[in-house]
Length: 360
Image (cartoon, rainbow, N blue to C red; front, side, top):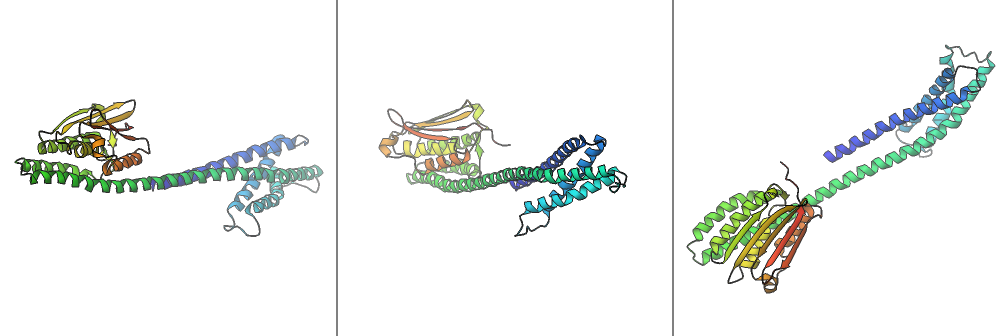
């Protein structure tokens, strides 16, 4: 709606500027032709210039009238031809009006031969020059109209692209939410099935965590600060599930807390590291989360010392593939997701995107 209003305002503004430019151009040409016409005449220059201005404005009015009327253009006569005919018809009448005004209503053509010659010269120059000036105005008008149409088309196309991107982003987000929740609940189920005395505490922590996480799952954007809170709660739940096999460190640049990102950006990387790196190995491993801001870019690194890609044969699974596409949509392609093998074992997931503060 806002884009459409902007487009209409732009078109109206262009039409207004075009009308002002037309009046200005008409006055300039009329004064110039009037001054030229006064050279061989004995009449005062300012009087001849006034006559030229009257003829020029009348021709412009005829041009503008037939530009809008009739509303439906005749099939047998192009509108621009109708405009030129209107100018040719109006110029002699306007010249007669100009002489009537500048002589106090008494042109005296019968007794003043010089006035007849002046009238004929004014009419001739008006009939000769006005159509050419009108053709130039038509060409400029068509160019201006083409630019306005192109601008309106670009605005409409960008609005449609934005709506399509938003719809695609929401669809991807709808896929992420159940994927993550099912994985988390499966982890808790494994803990309960093992009869761990920590099951009740883990379940209580999970409930508290989900209360904080679920309301944000469908938000179009969040901040890395919110993501960090969820990651810390998630890792604590996982650590309680496997206290002897999981350790973690969080190193977050304070400047990154207010940066905008798609929901579950950091959480997806951490959850992927737990599920595919730490969980399958008997010895477990360590997860290192690092976020820093440098040169107007945000760099997110989640590394683990788990079983690695070679052991699991995993690549960009559902979670990471969806995250990659969500980042591309959210940052218009200006984001990267890389997954590399670490030595001696483990995986490093890296995300890079523009450092933009979230809207208040």
